[in-house]
Image (cartoon, rainbow, N blue to C red; front, top):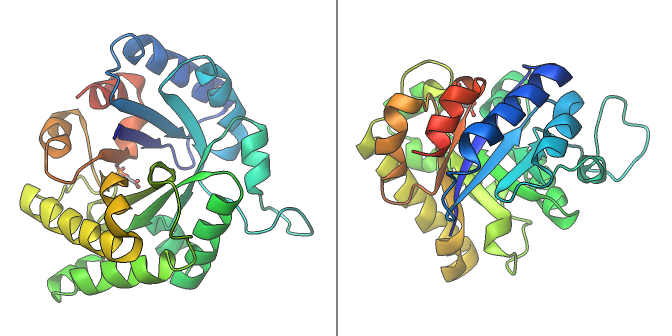
Length: 251
Ligand code: PGA
């Protein structure tokens, strides 16, 4: 199983900025990228083609859309269909990110529709889960993660190819705050995530990647990537500069 080193650029970077950061990343990391690593960047929609073009001939580098809608086409102003992401070279989609859940109001049911729709329409999907600080303090981490997974993945076919679905555990309190979850917290949450995935998909869930996200940076990624059940990372802030993201990718 290749470790998936993913960058979420959120609402940052113009076309030129995205194109040059992607090129720098290739220059810094492509030659040294181990065979068991895959690099994935989620640029904003407007820069997806710029990044996908830079990555086109590079093995081990992929690009994807931060979001997409659950219809093939139609009168859905502002929305983007999976086939439009594929059309410009995006091969992945992101679902369930905490900012879509908690800032933009997406609920578990909609995230479930989006996750299964993307998979059924040719995308690989990174599906995010994670508890809020009050849920952790209230001892509800497992309850929240289990609910998010059981609802969010309920329509994903059981015969899915395991490399097409990754789960990112991103505790909401660690996203963009500089506060990273400790090794014990990460290992507990990832072991629990694996257990639930196995109960849903059977043994093949051992081949699904579970990423950690939340204030990953060059200074902490070596320790995080070495933990049990950590099959990659999803990086926001520290992925915006090619120097820091290339260090993470090669950690
Ligand atoms: P962060 O964001 O690395 O800036 O904490 C992670 C994410 O939102 O995926």
